[in-house]
Amino acid sequence: MLIHTWHHSKNEKFLVVLGEAIFNFRNILTNEEYSITVNSDRLKIVETILGWAHNIKNIGDSELLVLLWANEVFNNEKSDTYTYLINDEKN
Image 1 (cartoon, rainbow, N blue to C red):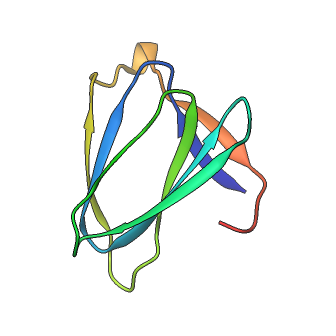
Image 2: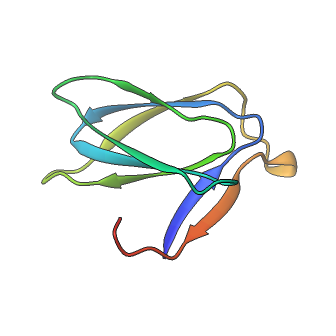
């Protein structure tokens, strides 16, 4: 079982500064999927899209360090982070 998260209003940007990761995305309405692999050798910002569930997996041989920026501060009383479970063994 894979755990993804998704948002209605929160935009997130990720930057892998150590290691290698795969970012998996799935549209919560259509189930369309895509993935992007990034590493700290070639810095690239990965941005989430509203309504697309996402997760990050360390696929390197070392630890993974990722910086995260979000357009809004996390509010535990009014969270915009939703869990999306995927029963899929390929990721």
